[in-house]
Length: 193
Ligand SMILES: [Zn+2]
Image (cartoon, rainbow, N blue to C red; front, side, top):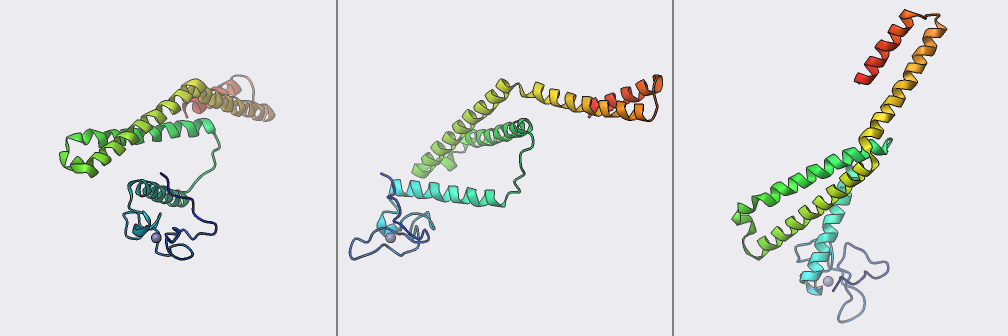
């Protein structure tokens, strides 16, 4: 069973369930009397049932994540290869954080009782999803040959700079061993960056 769709024009700050008696919808605060205040139906309209609670908690977590995302300073992606490598680093770090979480299984207290069992299952599910995601990203990187392509890009950029130095030297009338030495130094510096 899923939470019924909200009626047209429904204000998400309210429960919004159709009233059993009389006209209209419930105007109690969303999630009133439940553990997901601010989301879903109120306690009197099934908000505390397992299915509704699950859906409302998921909606709440998603809304919180969206709020957090809105405060991030999001930069445009100039180089998708670099961004993908960064993403892989973050995915691996997230997976490791979850692994550490799951590894504390010895901590009996955290997993005692029904709620503890649910927490354990959700942590393991997150961990497994993180592993899948890491696998996908790393597989994509392997397929794209990302390191070689990034190296090729910096080689190309170095070649452009060296060509510019070459032109500048020629323009200044510098040639022979002095020009060759200047280019050698420039190439060395560029490749060590
Ligand atoms: Zn209600």
